[in-house]
Image 1 (cartoon, rainbow, N blue to C red):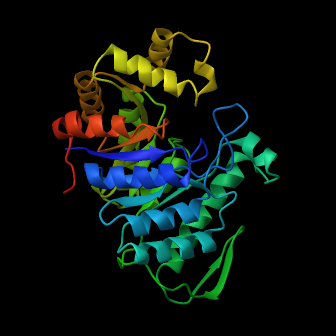
Image 2 (cartoon, one colour; image 1 turned 90 degrees about the vertical axis):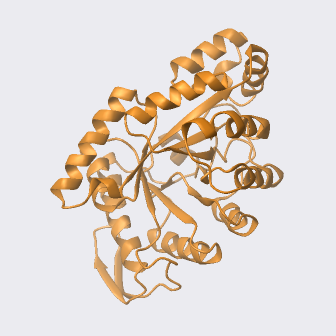
Image 3 (cartoon, one colour; image 1 turned 30 degrees about the vertical axis):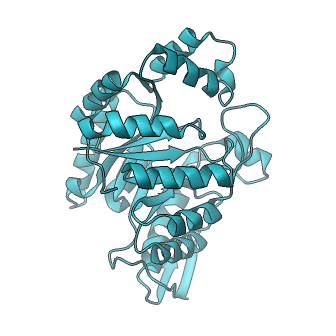
Length: 325
């Protein structure tokens, strides 16, 4: 049985009021986890929106909830120093009683880096940074004096405490689907592998590649949870779908010149979950057949708690398990 989580693009209009409502909804409705993006500015175009910084929002999630797991999906190593990230994550893990999940990636948005004056090295260098950062985080979470002589990061008898609640460390989520670097890193370091924007056949093939890579490094492939970030447009009927897609047009500029029916068709082509609860159940079941265990529902209209309520009531019981509400 699959689990459903909620994923928020925090740079696209997240306010404290919206974040509080989303935490409460995820907790109340039985979602497994709540995650947010880690961007500095809009990624969908336009003039930009309000957005809240990463660590304060995760602190609120730790304090306001009692059950759900939470974290980021995912932090670019280009602007997140791994030492500071390890310390923040361990503190939040302790604050929440062991519910933090740490998402790490190499970074991808060159325009965003340029806008904020942050260096954007070539992909190979970013992947090298990510590999070293994963090692640094794991070492620091031991709580013992550790040294590390990397090209990008160095530790000299460094100690980081408190340590995570679980002696095995905080679950690490690695995002991406590159077979040369990302999947090999996931095989070594990830507790969860996440990707998006792929077909089901592509997902199956990459998951099988991850299985093989795990075997090559002596790791049980079943130790890595397989997740998918996927956006959704769900309504009880066409009227609800049209209403929701019109609201989405306020968030996604590329939809604004389309009719509601054309926008709905465009979102289907982008491989969103689109349709009535019955249709969405069928779409999720097809993804489950290729190995998806956790669906991170990318929720672009952050005000639409009713959509999350509809999914929890009419989709979740038929495709997965909800955690005790």
